[in-house]
Length: 379
Image (cartoon, rainbow, N blue to C red; front, side, top):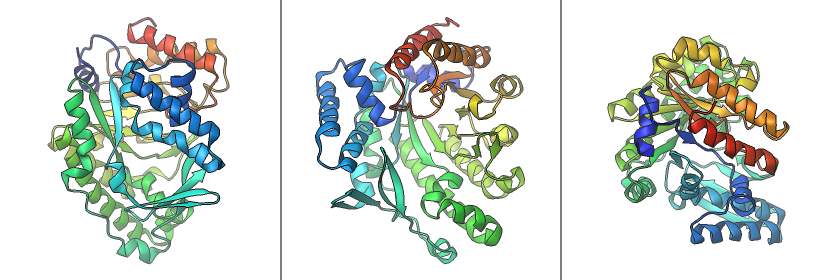
């Protein structure tokens, strides 16, 4: 089977020749792996990652040093394939077209995108530092930009032409989590009580906007729409199920319906505790759930037993514990997850989020060794 055939079959809970793999690597981790553990076979990509490492170590301003490896995200698709990934993921929108303003200053830089969201470096991450919707009235009058033109998805079409056998997933905003980049998190959740109609309207406006992203991505050659929408924290949800059903569920269902109408598959990425929502996630039309973190209180075996005939689980490599446990524990945690999720099909091995740069090299090496074993049924 090709990677594309394998991933699609797993998503549909059909037989596969081996367990598919998807990898999320935080860009600093990509540079670390590519320059210290597993250099790319392609010389051009090897030089790219070596160059990013040089910039990380030598730029004069800390924010620029921290920010340089983020460019790895734009160049890592082929490297992920070298590492064995069947699914490669892309951000929606062509990066140069998404930037409205870029400013350098003595402390580093800020980037403002076409949505009006301003970001700057917070440690090794780009963090939101300016919100386009500060007030309820801003939410009410906000107008989303038009992303219907095919040029916004040219990078997806180009990769599809280059790699017809790869499974392509494209990140799509989920309304609950992504709205926090427009309206501060504390204001957003308070707003669901203080001005619920405005928040609900904004969620639905965003959902309608994401339909452009879904259409453009699938028409460019994507197989999977990867909706990013965190619903939980450790051992609890961010809101009650009743509130989630009012604010978030209709939007998720709309996104899934449009994806299926155009022949695509839906993967939902949702961090934290989500067990109480699984029945409604299935009802919304989600095909694959990532990552169902066991360390957040989710019961993978129980979820598999109840929903495994309707939901594929994309999980198995817990990036939250990898930096702090020993190599043998890394291996056993991965094997345990595979034993719970793989029987009967409907399992894609994946990191539970972006593999962090503070993960010890020995644990990363064991992770890749164990990936080979699990892919070949050795668990």
